[in-house]
Amino acid sequence: MGEDVQWFRSMDYGFIDPTVTLWWAILPDGALHVKREQRRQFCTIEQLAKEIKAQTRELRIPRVRYTVADKFSMGERANQEDALGETRAETFRSHGVPVVTTNQASEQASLSTKER
Image (cartoon, rainbow, N blue to C red; front, side):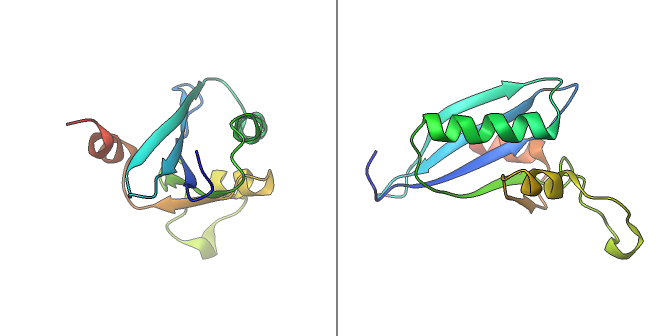
């Protein structure tokens, strides 16, 4: 794929249930293409971040604009002032996989990406 393609990843985090990561290409005409799907189970965030970065290098993707995940699987807090420790999203970020979160539940997101 050419240099005019933009890339992002989407992720549904799980430990018992598998973590699923998709590598998406936004083509010049606006179409979306899934280049790779990865499923991992019983992995720490540190292990997942290492694998995600390795897969991105293997795919020869020069730059991933962002990785998106739903805020529920990333452990986003309702009240930042009362929270201690870091969220899963913060742990991914600290291991080199910046994650932005959405308000959409992963079940809703998966329904909107199915082929029609």
